[in-house]
Length: 511
Image (cartoon, rainbow, N blue to C red):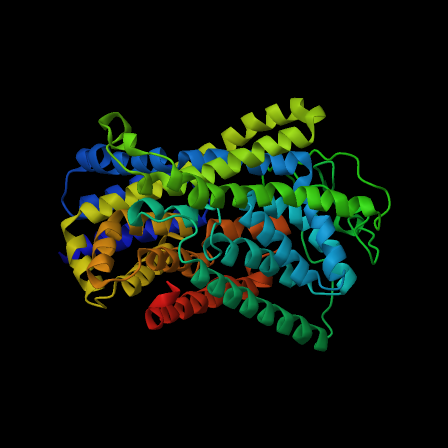
């Protein structure tokens, strides 16, 4: 038993180390799983073909529509220029001096609309830098402001978020992405509020030390998709909005990123304070509103009045609406938003069709990466030693919400992946947690919300791939910026999920 336990530890260490070094989890996860199998003296080939692959395939079957629609929508938001239009409009509302607040809100809006973190990072960085320069705020805080909007409350706390983290629990708990809306909003307010308090305090603290804006990034990106010297990347800025030179995103460069998404921008108004910015910003916001609106409409207004009894037929998997509603509603919202983008700018249809193919290609690697992590978790769960670990975990508490939070947070931390950690937890413990909640009269909506929020807490440790990518896009290092990233993406979300957990258990009516 001790040898088998050592095998799990070594396999996790291998997975974390290799992922941190940038190796593909699609390859690394099955190798890591086989390490654990060898130490347990279990069957190698059977563990791969009969355990790993069915689990990975099952995840792809359940969630690929979300990955595909989300990747296409994100690509279209980028190619159409809507994402940048939105990012340029928000400063007019809050004022150019509030660079941290503006950056966090823009990234949160794009995240809540279903745009991928990859697209958001490349869209916001060239716009956030002149904002920080104009407000004389240290560039060290920019990655944390971006991370607060992308990786925390907008991903898993806000009800209706189309991000995969909010959809993964739906088939296990028969819930929707709007599960526990009151608690979700409370958790979002706590997380966003604490994150902003920290960043604002850090801004004042750095200014007291005489540390304002200095471009310490290794590179900057211009609208042509090429890397230019930092000294020539300073964009002009007015009190009413960004100048034209602030726009554009990258496709590569000295930061080492390859095949980054490019943005094809339509001609912008030449005046930074032009009313055209407001119009374009509102239009850029519209697809996001459609995603959330169609999602909610299908869940609350349409599906209750339609007959879905046919889902019980064998050819449809002998299922029911509650098992697929979460996936269906989000996918419909994303497809509706995609259609809207086509309708709003019909003259760009030729470019949009190219974006469909690019978005489809962009969906493949993320879904296979997460599926490989799910397969890894399934193999670990199949080992005899895992039953011992499971018993030890369940000895911590008999409350399924507490168990779900602890298991999700720990596994997400170990794997360095929120979606991967949540998927492993659901595949391994989902049915047991759901049964325990039903036996104890605990709301499954509440369980959904707290495990989703737990997935975006301890996951953002230094080896997290998304954090590494964000720092590369910003041109900064862990040493320069991770302290603040760690506070707003690890400490603050963990406080948020604990607060929601305690509140939900104390006041069941909120669940």
